[in-house]
Image 1 (tube, helix red, strand yellow):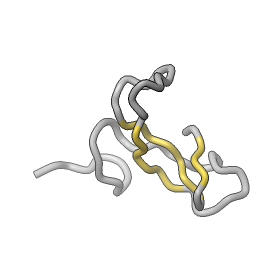
Image 2 (image 1 turned 180 degrees about the horizontal axis):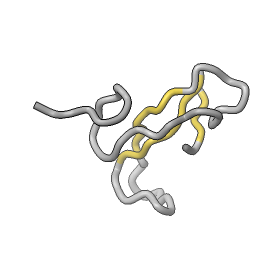
Image 3 (image 1 turned 60 degrees about the vertical axis):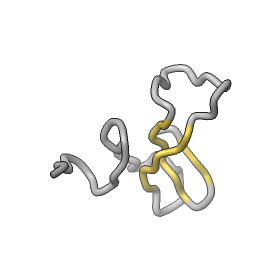
Image 4 (image 1 turned 135 degrees about the vertical axis):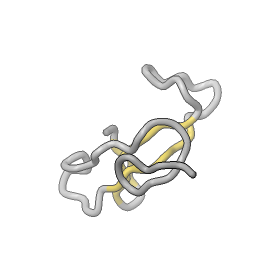
Length: 62
């Protein structure tokens, strides 16, 4: 059985970031997995999914 060490977000890869103060004045600011589109390399992104902080329909870097 998988063990959740931090947060309550499930998904592949590393642990979710702490999104406190990452979305500016927008609330709530929650960690989400987003796909990294093939053919669009993103510096420091090794996996095909990455963590971002989301508020409404906007995404922010953690």
